[in-house]
Image: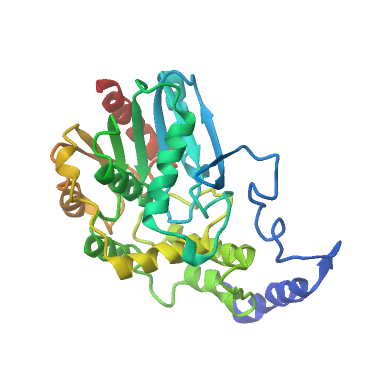
Length: 331
């Protein structure tokens, strides 16, 4: 355990550094506390669709069946899902992108975001990479990404050939809130949570100071992977940059609009691959059955030896991959 006295030394250094300039730039500027986005770094792979720049890349033969990977959050990035590149060697054109306001993609003010714009972005990404109208399109969404995939299917139930969903919080607002409350069930005395939040009193940022806010949000994300977290991960997730503003915007919109993305799912009769993990104490079979029941045809799979981010860690990926591949090949 780190004592408060010992904590003060690095924090004091950090606080002083925030006031210092390096070649005329504050350490809180983009590229210092957090990596630059595609707007500032032309070396990053990117696409421009739906009026925005996205950090994105694709692997495999462009004429193969397309598989679009949707990361969680809201506000995470696709770095921790890169194991899915392996599917490119099995006849799939695997597309990754950091969602709007997330990862290394372009940032916007809070009032710019909506669920609809996230759906429209996904539609535009598919259109950008699709090589022919006959090309089959699949989605693989994890956590919030699985919720976005379902929101998309609910709006376009005939557009997708198949979908893999990994532990979505829910497709109705009540179910989402119930799961989030369980998954964030930390003790206020948690050392990991204290370490993640301690610097809040030294680093502040207004609504559009994205570098500062993203840095702080990244610190908070470390608490999700602590030993006392109920979600059961094996360790910290790799990520490039968190998206604080989009996270807050979409959660606030959820509270206001109380979305229900199940109204048209009855039209999607293709089998859905729905995975939940053995070690996520906040999820479990009961919640998996509740959430997945919105679809008329479900293949429910437990991923043994893994927590919430089973795609990212060796044990989870080893158990998930062959099941997911068999599902995709069956379609």
